[in-house]
Image (cartoon, rainbow over all chains, first blue to last red; front, side, top):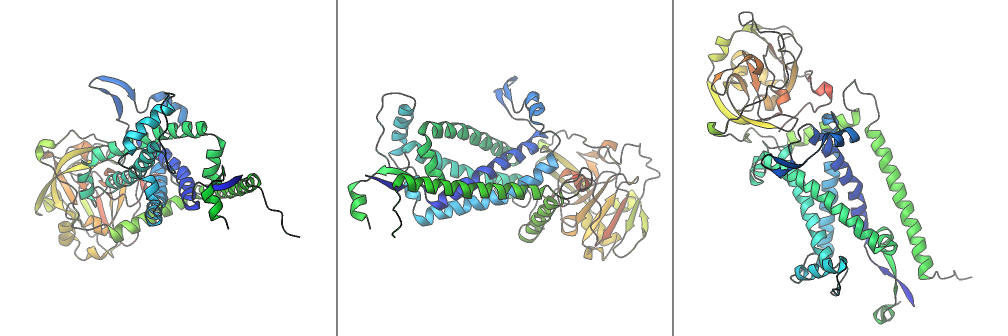
Length: 226
Length: 251
């Protein structure tokens, strides 16, 4: 017999789906800001493998000469990004759901098994709760990174009024560097995340939209019925 | 007649439809909101009024909750001084005639300049030296040493009582470049009327004979070649604020 099984709480889904467009806007407006001073690259010494960003990228995206507009957008959506993130963390702690999310001691060894399995190696998946070990680590890391984006952002935004914070993060220039690479990491996460969601299929994606999946009834569910 | 019970498949289809409708509604509301942010008429080059309002809100939050005279911009040893770019020549592109230069002051409540000062008047005030990280709104910064008189001392001496005004406005002699400052930032102890940079007299490119150095603001507020200082309750015009940037531009 089939039953509905709750996968994601309503609150979690709202926090997630609010964050998605807001983070997109933060990255987009951040690009408008970054354009006016774009020193970062992958390389060593005189050798540059990749400059963030090449001229063809600016030509294709037309993000040039929009610094003032970018700053205004960034300092508006930063409020929503921060409050949504803080509300999510508060909810996750208060509801106790953090227990299903935070990495456990065994998560790090298990995550390796998950990655091997996902890469097609014949490694069995360890038993898991709501999230597997790799998800526990990744989803927790992304929350911590969100907090770091807020802190490095504040350190760049008010380096005189919050000079202690700027100093803690290694100074003004390092804070901007950290802020940038956190952003690049989101884009890396996004690529893997989308790939995994596509692989997992429609039912998994649907559960993040409506909160439920259809599952085979287990004896426990039957005894709790009614 | 009892309602027919939905199968799990029907139930999840119903929930999925409902969730997509809610998401669609939320997305439409979000798009409409973003449209409203960008609506309204702004002067050529300026940002839309709603976004200007957001900057004003952020300014109030910062001025209420964060700004303090005790919060100082970090200072550096002279060994860390870098080579600062001369960004922007609006208002200083004509050669300076040092003999003709003077500084006009419009004290709080006056409508006309009350007097004309010379560099000797400014130099008579206590000299302060600071090595700070000069920050451009573009994102780069350079450690630079400046020396000059505190704007707070200058105000007390040449425009006593003007501290009561809300704002200070400054202009180049040709009135091409102009900035507006809130009074707390203007009276901040690190705010200088500078006449020396990196151990030498200020050169023309960097605003000789007298420029503003205000480390609690982006470089756009650090006006070069000051010709006039006015104390007022009305927010003075600001060159870059008219071009879309935050009027407050505080750090």
